[in-house]
Length: 228
Image (cartoon, rainbow, N blue to C red; front, side, top):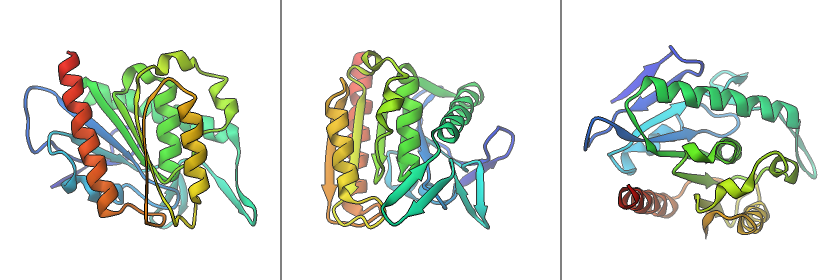
């Protein structure tokens, strides 16, 4: 059963943990793509570890009926352009919402994961790399890495051993596979613990990729338990 919450700065839906192991639960924050909404990625919840409190917020930019985005983008024949200042504003809105979640819900602060698709993957990188001390892992699906200018604003040494799973479709028609490989190249230059995978799919989440994501999340949860 999904629960709606309009009380915080971003409207969101959530699935409560189906299996509780204590007073707090690991948190999985799902960030949808450009033109979608909070009802999109929450549909993946039944196929993900049932120990998670799963929260899917609605991005703040209204694009049309039922369509939202984290920041405006422009489509051109040779690609997509982004206003970096607006992207940074979106990042701050998400970080503020992140803090609200930690104050509102009974979550285990050592087991907080951010998982985004497309533009939501970009937001996952922006938020988690800005405050890596708050994040146990990142899942970036069919997205792209932020530009080099962003990495000049953060202390990349703080990313040491941060688990990152990046997945991309070989036939992605929105963000071609080259975007995924550019992300891999940049991530390999950072001190993160990277897992990178490609799949025979388009701009989507396949059954195979979702199964791998679930297995990866379970492995990181187990590892976090061993660290504590």
